Image 1 (cartoon, rainbow, N blue to C red):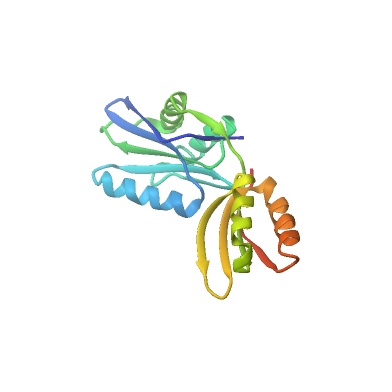
Image 2: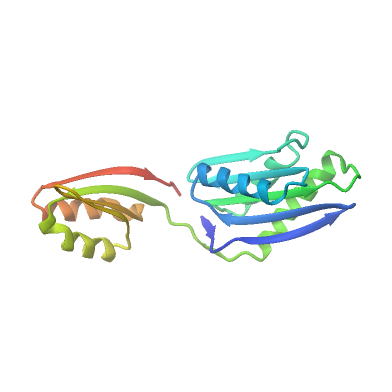
Length: 199
């Protein structure tokens, strides 16, 4: 599986209609929805903002007023075909006055996304897991070192009666982190999985 290193845009003009495509790394449906809302705000004069998402086992295909199955689904098929995950494809359409018909629309949306993906830099998609770990202050330094060694990233640290660390790390390293922390803290540890993105 692959994701994208950064967003890539491309534009296509077909019979006076403009199709502005963007493919970008997105973690989940909430982030995708926020991005689509942002595009709607940036393009108040457009006819449609169609989108497709593949992220951690969640997928979405939205035609946004185009005939059913002519936009979101073909876009999603392009993402699947390229073995992508954690990726959002959006196409903003400005209608040029000439109807393209169902076949023409499927082609246009497919081509717009495929063209953007041609310029995109693919990176290996590594499923991640978010953990919340609670431990004594005495163990915080060791825990931080261990997280770094395992390729994890500290998202948030809260100091209360204990230290609560929110960690994002490769799913494959999550079990190792919990086992090693349990042994280091002699069992004085509470860890819970917050969420995970499946590859």
